[in-house]
Length: 384
Image (cartoon, one colour):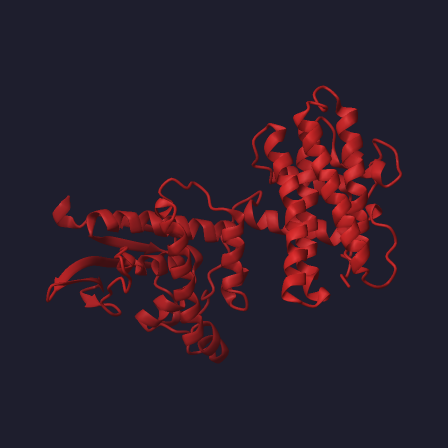
């Protein structure tokens, strides 16, 4: 059962956070598509749970997150239609329009003390039906200059949402707080870099605050390799793509430099430079050890395969939330899990910007600047 937060969440307060993170277009089309899609995600997650025969309690976190996402899109639709989540929640909970003290949990009937899977499934089917009606009526222009019609249909939509939450003992307050935490992690009101993980340690155990690395391609015995050199010393192993057809993955160490520079995290860079945090036995073993190194290598490879299908993010100003959430899941249990989604996005996009330069020039100087939290590319001196 979900433990409720210490402070209840009013619909008005939740809507303020939701509006601050709203990056959708001003028309209602996208918001309504998102709402229908999130209901589909709830139903899809239930289908997967049944298929994989997971325990129902194991499904709880997914339900909590999806319900929060549904609330976010209801808020977005209501604002675009000239009403508010606060008014809709008040009406759905049996209150009056304009009521300011209504909380999200007032939508959910008192739980019975145990999970009712059948009631949850019925509520989801009702929710899907109401989502379909919303879409149909929108297409038929039923909400054009008719706020009351939209508000009434959103009230009808919210009631099975409350019943669904109650059936699985999920607090809508908790769903709202979780959604706020996620959106703040992705779109914070203020971008503030978290402290570096190795702050306060001896300089011998810190990632270099300014690291210039020469990265270049060279042919050896008819085969192309990529080398890294800093201060005249070769770093790590010479690399090939280890893949057919070739895709320039041999330049991938630039991603590790980007993680080091922007995130302040890179077990792989620490291993290459031999700067593990030996004075902290548990950190040395777990955060800087072989498994953490493998996690980072696997993450870099997985993101690379995704980026390859999108021109290595050449025309991608921002990354999708699903990708960033998957990245967080990849590093779960490691210190990198603490890093916000917006910072992961910055590290990934900067890394691929430098990668594309290396792809084109085949050599260059890459600077990992932890003071400015950025990674930069400079053309090889002979090319200037």
